[in-house]
Amino acid sequence: MKRQVMWFWFFLCVFLFASCEKPVLDSKDDVRTSSKERSNQIRMVHIHPKELRVETFEEMLEARSEDLSRASGHEVSKQKLYAVNVYEKKPNDESYSMYAYGLFNKPSTIAIRMNKDNLYKVECLIVEEGDDRLRTKDGEYLLPFKHGNDSGTKLMNSFVFSKDENLSHITKGETSIMDGRDVEYPRVTKLYGTFSDFSPMKAKDLTIDMRKASFGLNFKVSPPEEGSLVVNYIGWRFSLTKKSKAYNNAAVYSFRNIAKACQDNYQTTLNVKITWTKDDGMVEEEIKELVVKRNVMTVVEISVEGNKPQGFSFNEESTDMKIEEVKWNFLL
Image (cartoon, rainbow, N blue to C red):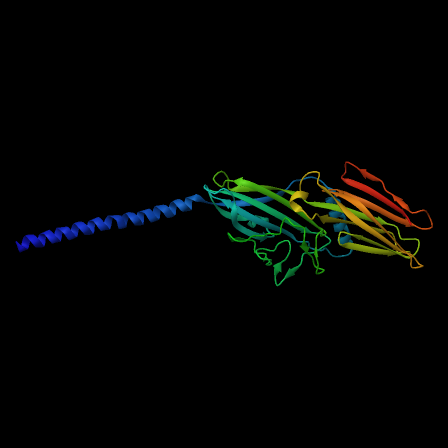
């Protein structure tokens, strides 16, 4: 009887051990399978910000700038930075959430892992230095590249994965430049583009059409007959005296509202203030509204004269070459 009881307990233990062992083995297989499936669901996607190729006034400015730098005996290197935000939407999500952000100067390194089951939205801002240079602090770029709670961003040519913060200023105009100021209309070229509902299941390359959010101003100002003349506009100024040479300067500026400014036919109105201080101390002022348009160089000619009835006139001409002329003759 004792022997039968012993055998009973022996077979019971073997049975229980076998029953427990199978789920453990199955669990390891499931882990391996699940890991493999997750790996198969991830795809490395390369992002290609591509400028829409249209010959514009900027090419003429750049060509002239290159000629001047060669003539002066040295060429100035200009930075071109790519600020990228990536958003993710999972199958059951109603809207996109933050996924990753990064600052690059090498377009070939803009690549990120995406889940094939999800959809993605990507926005990109390109900033190319012009007359103004971008300012850094402690190795970090400031506006418009700040992230999170007003923190500078390092140029790393890689993405930072975050669900809480990204490059939150890239659609705003404020830009930190080398003279220590944050200006709304910097003398740089900005391009902006977005792409929504990208599925990494369908492709491993994403091309974003980048559109300019910039305009040009070419001031041509005759020196005053007497005293001094000061021209103020959108945070910039220059001055001439009766002994000055004629002023002729062209530059590219970026708009304040980047998302809207990259749309076709975008335009906005700016104020230009002309202050003429005569030799006898008398001060004459005029404020003129100037319409500037996306991807258009506006040539503004200004001259002032005295001892005549007050008033002014201007003529605006638009041509197919994306250049417009505005002539102001102030009779003060």
